[in-house]
Image (cartoon, rainbow, N blue to C red):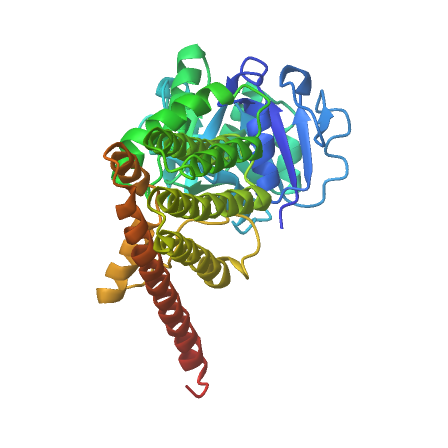
Length: 437
């Protein structure tokens, strides 16, 4: 297991801030996420790095004297979009060769990237301009101790020359990671292009049509302004929760103007609900606490919404049935949340996002796949646009009926899909092991 990483900071770009983090800060957070325990930085003063990172200003400060295991060397002349460190630490270290992460994906200013030519899994040539190049270096090398010491004798441009010497001696293998993109940060235009690309990655493949073309544009504009501030993702989540609860309370009086205001506040809450995740992903600040806070907050707002509409409808009509409908809709939300917790989150451990979909999507086929896709689609917040339209038309009673029926049908289908997925997953291993079905 790789436990140590060294970031070789390029003074010209180390302190450049991309999406709220300096180049070195971003690499340091990625390293910790990849399980790196011992993290060192060469020339940290130029990077503005603080916290637990152990720093050294020159290679001769005893940096590698106690090295006895493979080490990750990170040449911080840019940043990577994608899990480059996680993929590289999963490689099997070779005792006599280093492994360089490469890719054919490169952002703005591709001429500043270090090009590589590969042959049978080896880096055959490496440099600023390489004839017949197959891709570019991602700036990360997995090294045995001996080769790590050799490369660290001359950081900066000498580091690239050291890699070229290893390639010439046949001691530099390639790990081709096409899902990772190299983003140079050599000048202001490249920095802006890198930041824009990272921001665009906030649009998730699971986003609905309205979320992709409306909500995300608004939330990313807000997130861009929050990135350089001290505002945390959890603080944004709490603001979103507060706005959503205030919007839900606005339905209680049963007045038309208050209903419209409440629906508008819920849309604002929905946009802010996108900002917390964007901020966490871009700053590499995801946490299980944040995931739980977001999930519980969303469901609390939905329960309060249906109950608030039910109470407001009762104030208007005096019919107890309106209260019952609001309560039934809120119960459906709670049961759906309990189902997601029990089947999808209860036993989840380790890194990665806490929550990505309400139902398992992989390996599904036929009618079950259709129901799964429908459940995941209904789990988004697009219905809030319908809520605003009905509030403007003074027809919120329709949302009560739709919520009372729809929320509980959603719960039932969600429960059945997850039960079917669990039973299918259990049958496979038992049959494979020869156990009795």
